[in-house]
Amino acid sequence: MRAAVVNSFSEPLALEDRPVPEPRSGQIRVRIETSGICHTDIHAARGDWPVKPVLPLVPGHEGVGIVDAVADGVTRVAVGQRVAIPWLGGADGTCEYCVKGLETYCLNPTFTGYLIDGGYREYSIADADFVGIVPADVDPLDAAPLTCAGVTTYKAVKAARVGPSDVVGVIGIGGLGHLGLQYAGIAGGFTVAIDVDDAKLDLAKRLGADHVINAERQDVVEEMHKLGGADAIVSTAATPGPLSAASASLRPAGRLVLVGLPAEDVFPLPIFETVLRGISVIGSLVGTREDLAEVFELHAAGRTRVELETRRLDQVNECFEDVLAGRVPARLVFDLRGQFRDTTSSPGHPAGLLRRLSGGSRFTGAYRGDHRADTRHDRPTRRSRPRLGVVPVGLGADASWRTEGRSPGCAQRAAQERRPQERRSERWNGAAGTGS
Ligand code: ZN
Image 1 (tube, rainbow, N blue to C red):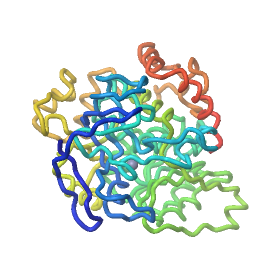
Image 2: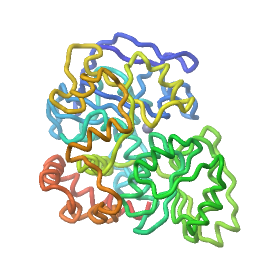
Image 3: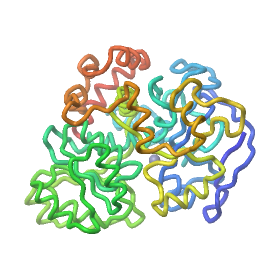
Image 4: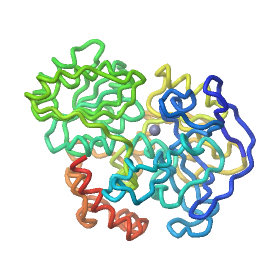
């Protein structure tokens, strides 16, 4: 099988032929269909962070594909099922934080594509208990970005405790931000997109942003104050530059949620203002398995849209350059279907069919909108969008309450796809979600 491999932090990735890996007890093997590129993969490949991965490494923590083999002890998933392999590839389940429902802060975690090999390859190995189950209504291309960019910003919006009528700013309308903006809207907030690129702000408007601010031409604090200030701001920024303005844009009791991990690690925060206005600064790291299940449910119900472009795995090094230069609209996703073997992509799926007919890989904007327009994915406008059903996400303990506003089929599938023990853990995660 083919794999994109980091052999040195100072050299480009190499496309290598490797033996197909065998799953061990509790593991599954997944035939990867799609695999998203996250900025974290670039940090991993370049050894940018204090804890460096062990080389050689196959990056990737947005791998989506079909279960191809299961080892002994696996009961949660079966061969033929579509799953997503997220950043949190495993947690011990016994440490204080796992027991509290905060598994992303486990003391003995496994990070996919960093501590173990990830999804930039044809076949990947995963812990059966930690993969996300991808609903049939979610296109595998969309599922990839949802697996990290989606769940990370979804969790950040929970951490921001967004309430109906809150003004919510999202800094950086890229892979993470374009989804975060939609989750903030779903949670009931009036959304404000902040970026320096007009094309990204246009994307934000198409995705339903109530206001946009171009931080290069406009004064963010002034513009935010015209709106009465922000109740919450989610930052996906790749530099700490916008964070001081963000904290100054908050109303009393406002929340600044940090998600992006800039290489420059600090920003100045005025203590006096922070104390007098009761500002909270909150860090938020990816999301739990339950968060990912909710992200997929929302997408299956047509409530979110993913902006992406597809690439081939052998374009990995160009892709990294494009991401670093900000030349991509939101997310790049490797489409491995049919690249190395003779398989059809999503047979019968309108997206797969249209893609083959059009012969192109560009998958954004109007085209995707058109595709959605003649299916049940047609996105409700803000005015008509049902406001309840997913709103106080942090309270989502009761399964029947959480299924409001969805088609019965969808709710039923979601219920079937979860094991009883996961339904129990919902309560933990739900309780923790409001306090994190
Ligand atoms: Zn990521």
